[in-house]
Length: 414
Ligand code: SF4
Image (cartoon, rainbow, N blue to C red; front, side, top):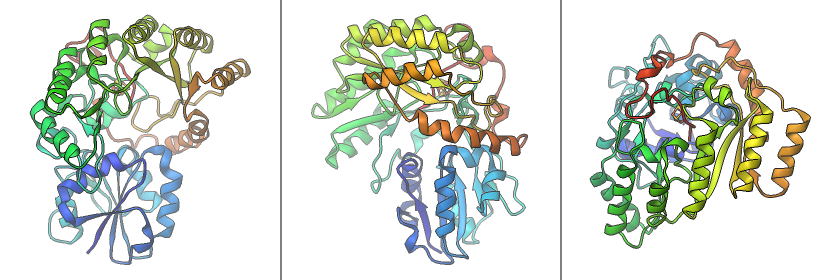
């Protein structure tokens, strides 16, 4: 049996470590035309990619085995099965990918995280990422330095699907993997983490962890160009300080750093369980400017309970300080507490102001496309309500992280 991983622009980060684990058994393809009956094709996707995935399934010949993984299928396996998948793999794949391939060939028991055809899977989380390669030579990607998140932002799947324990790759291992990228001629080194300033710790601010790591890499590989705090990593606003950002500036190549604000209203931030306040965002943006960075600040439009006036006023303050706004539209993601919350249309006043920011070059992002998706995602969630996976990761707010300021419970997904 041939095993294909269907690679798209959006799922490269998910598949690359699995390709490394599976060796040559799993073949990456971007064109489904070469798939034949009897082959197995693995998919990995986020909720917004459902339409593209549905189209791709249509192209596959009859008799192809179809396996879904990634955040949407992991959170809502019944929907993935209804879409036409034979199996759904729930959660993190490094430990079980080879068992999955063996099982599909009829040579092993199913992995415990497989659902479909009489199998009720449980979600696999807690992989010690330190033990596994972060990327395949076939598909080099930014290096994941940390996985999992102790915060519980109500719109975010990360702690529900990847667990609340933050796991890290050690500096020694990262030195090794960065060296591999450099030897392939890749000088721009990027990192994946939900909060770069928490590297090496349990989830609270740990600026020395990140600075030590970056200093080590820079010393060892002076020709590398390190990107940290810019996509696909970011910082929680209340975790950064001027000292941290100044030191960072001397080590990294990026001139932009990303913080999550999401809303300008403290009351809304509390409802979102963000764990920081509006004032933290302003302080982080100001410190970033003074340290020589351009701050890019994430906002979520269309939240069911947002205070548009407060968000607008914060965006205006930030833009005056020289920040740029990265706009998203609220997506009710399965397995999150807001999965059944209805996205709210923008008021005419808010929309007009947003267009002004955009015209001035101060606001960017895919928020209009996300707005189209959010409505039907809301309907899918309602239809499958009650069958989400990962909700058991909700829990005691006070225990949801260690080392951060009291009462904190939030962040922004990558
Ligand atoms: S948004 Fe960020 S900080 Fe909040 S739960 Fe998700 S990953 Fe964690």
